[in-house]
Length: 195
Image 1 (cartoon, rainbow, N blue to C red):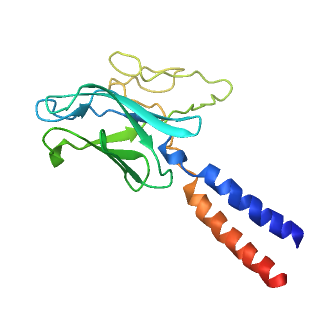
Image 2: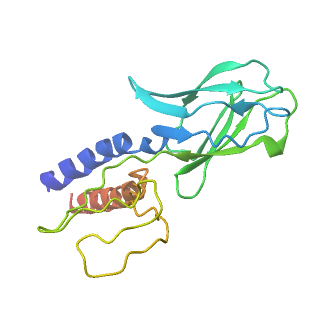
Image 3: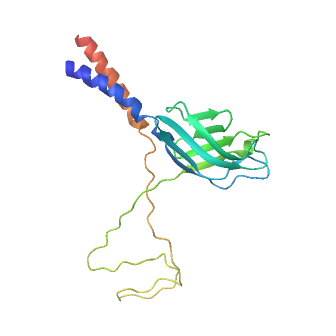
């Protein structure tokens, strides 16, 4: 019974450290914002955990910016899907947590100035080449594929991009924390009932 109580208390202490990870990362500037009428990100938004403070910084530019240069946001509620910084703007995640809608504070508010910054996902893809085969690079410049190793026709169909793309990683552990919270509450109730 004591073990259940200890486990329940420990799991509730672990949960807050799992949350908030959705904000950490780099979000790519789409370059689609109209600099002639908006205040726009002019570089990527990089959000980091700096000694327990989740902060992001990125450069801005455009004719409607109150001031140009670098902007810094601080995320105060790590569990929220949006944050508003009065001097910077509004940042809102989409349902997948892989895209961040950004509306910057500017002289003349304009809903068409919103940009969507996609999370940069980095990863390494390993391609295992079976023994006795020759690796083929279909990404080289030139006029088509060639017959490697005989037994087939030479084609001139052009070079298709056959590189593998990494799957987007889970942006957050929040999908698991709700389950842990429910289990922790159930364990606490069972412990109270047994006492």
